[in-house]
Length: 507
Image (cartoon, rainbow, N blue to C red; front, side):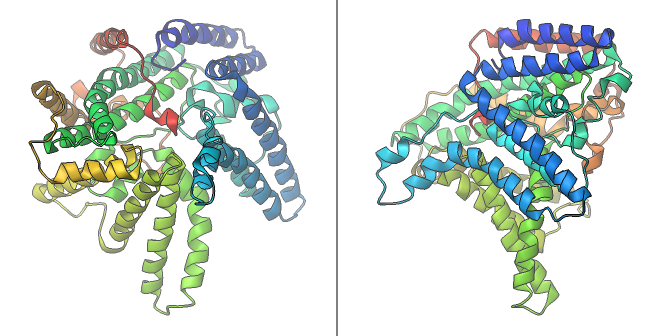
């Protein structure tokens, strides 16, 4: 069951909302949470019930470990070993299911047939709920009070809108919102905003992302089969994937945030017009925001500090120490980001390339662009970002390095006489300009929502330029009702062609 499937939209979600708001109306606080937990378990088990015990075990482990760390900290005891143990135990299932086959296959004396025995069906959402629970333990070590209610903690982990592919939520963002007993609810506003955000995401996924996929998949399949395609087909596929990936994952995030808002719970936004940025550094500040935030808050300090300490023993100049430590810390961080996405050299190389670019930008360039008023320069910087993303996303998309290098070679040899993929060039050109219009010229949905606050963002310093034009300001009126209804109707038409899973389910 996925968010864009008819069974979810027509049956599951309306029933859960009915149970939830009925329980809220009668002030059955504990029952309300149990309803969401049970429905979330059903939602998760729909994929593969065999992995439900695993997520149960992680919940119990982190609940008791979190309380133990908190009590030890309250007694004034050192908690470094307990925290380290908790993090390692969380990482073991992730590494085992996601990376065992890859690690084994790197040893030349291990037969690939043996390594393939460890290619498991990845437990859905394990990359996301693992990071989420690690952040909970680290926050307790930093001063957060541990959760004493197993029901509330289970709600935090299992809440189905964010369970499968994020956003990666921190505990302090959710615990105050699930105190339903003391909260004031605005049923009409929450449902109106939630349905608006959900429908926006549904349209992105079903209509835009899946259409762009029709131009991506044939070309990559051909190159993977050692068939040379012409440069035009390669560039069309590469550019299409830039749009497909954005509309697919930002569409999922919008749907997750919208569903959550229907339950009067705000999740952090995950995308803030990243393609409009002027550098790769700023792109990562606005792309998959909750992952970047997790890396920045929970991994970067533990890597940067020892690197800086050791480099300072070699170089005396503070400027040199800062630049060298920034370079190596950033390289390691982005290698982790790449490897987090998948067990393969394509993901590692993708992360390394972005790490080098971001490190060099951090050292030598002013990435904000605030001092750049000349539109030509801004255009060139956006073009630079677009080219970097187009090239590196080819590596990200390719199933292996050989396919990635062959695909890039096809892009840059400008050979128009090799095998031509049967594309409707006129249709693609129209779709391309639609994509440009949405990602570069139009405001994003959270800017449009403005004062209605589409998602958590203030704590993380995410800046949304407010809209002043009435056309781009959301209000619960007939115009927006018509627009959302039309978007939903078009999405249903496209849904009849079949439902395609979200790209990030693989990660």
